[in-house]
Image (cartoon, rainbow, N blue to C red; front, side):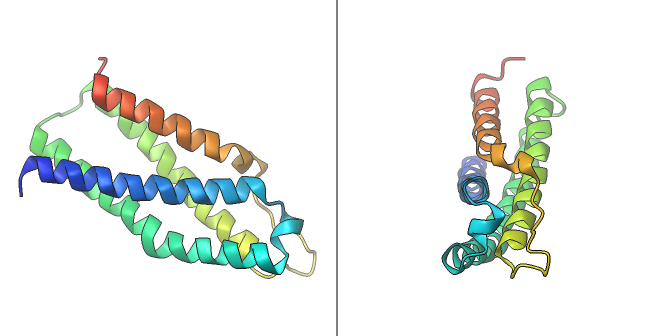
Length: 145
């Protein structure tokens, strides 16, 4: 397979991953536990959680595999811009895990206490996703150091 095809597949996988993360982040930041318990929002959250398991998570895995393949094939080694990019990708991967867990928690039937704990910091997750992507794209295109 040509290197350019690997780049194309990597960008496609990243696009699907980030789109899925963005939807999860927006849903979690828009819905509180009370609203999420209503049948309409709960159905949307369950559907988003299924999408995350079936599409977004596999896209993230494929993005990682293709990214590592590109680094090895391209012989980039430990370029400073690449190390910074990988650190941000690790943070986005961790955020994806928190968002997936948040979707599951908010979409499940309410426990007897009526409280579904989701970190209040996830309210800022849409901004974190956007900022992470902007920095990553800038690093890849500009390679500033």
